[in-house]
Length: 166
Image (cartoon, rainbow, N blue to C red; front, side, top):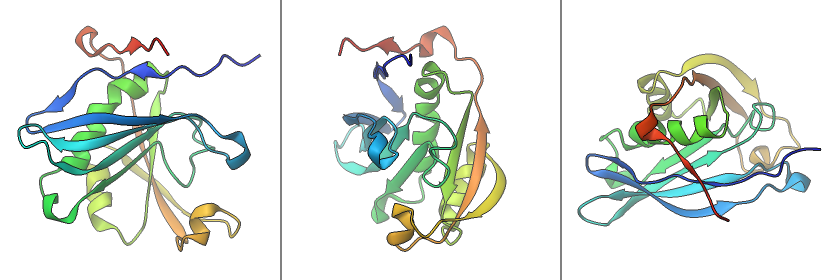
């Protein structure tokens, strides 16, 4: 029998002027092949303005072949400050606390800034895959994804994530 999924408390996720604020958690939906997900706002720590979003999906690499474990979007006027890369790095301890040993990022081949983000965080390009016609993101217009892998190592004690009391 499979152990039920438990969302964890991510704690305070801050890097200089960037703060990740948990806005919601989404339970798995096996009928849609969706895995559990955390969603965070990227906020400027002193101005309290939302600069974008980042999502961490917890599941097998196979289930996330076309979505990836991490997805991010940075609003146009806030681009150029490496907020996407810094957000990814802030989420690594949470991913590791869930037992993930590697993260996969799936990037549109035309999105050069996202490819650079993958390189900045140390993810390695593995392959480009064709999206099946029956997949939800194909229906949204996507045809290919560049897949990057980022290996995870142990986290330090001050990065520990506490179990949620959900």
